[in-house]
Image (cartoon, rainbow, N blue to C red; front, side, top):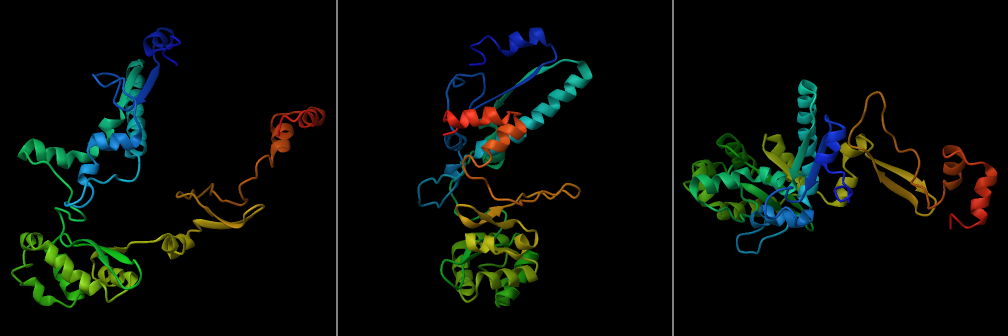
Length: 299
């Protein structure tokens, strides 16, 4: 609508030569597909993410979020900073053309490099990682309880073998070297799963972290809500709502030392602060407000 109204960058820059305009679209402002509309989840597919998510024997899986919606704004902010620096040096503005698809592809550089350098097209590999083995999510004691474990190098592998009570794996021909472990990864994952089933996810995490091995339980909503770290930081605040009763509110992830943010009142009900907004903020007289109420404007 802005451009149909004659307010394109080319027109506006005639009035304000140092104007900086940012245009962010699915596929960019140029090229054969520039006019196509889209959504974040569709761009996930165009970028190729689903083809790398899931298990080898299954169909591609969506990544669960509109990825481009999340990552395009930081790229836009960086471009704006660059344009502002250029404006500071030259006094000139410019037009910024952001392709949200192209921001997503930045995060697929390893797959693109593998294809351009080696002619190999990446595919779904489950929880496997080319940089670590074992690398996966393993079943633990209890109902649907899991712990994620990642062992990237030989030092961690030796510590891992001690933790699981299998020091002989260090010299076992199946697992001695990284390439051996990678070649026999399915067998190794099965053996690890037999061990982890004997412990809770919290116990597995504690044992691994205590030995310097990267590990973390796969948290449920209940785990997150009761997490001692989040409790310490008062991330969840219980307030009494007029309609819902006691209700937990999610706090802010950033704590400012001089101006700390604090949730001290529940969210309002519909129309709860109408009078306060009209008379206290908008400056209406009491008579004006009563007249609007009488006329049913706020119903």
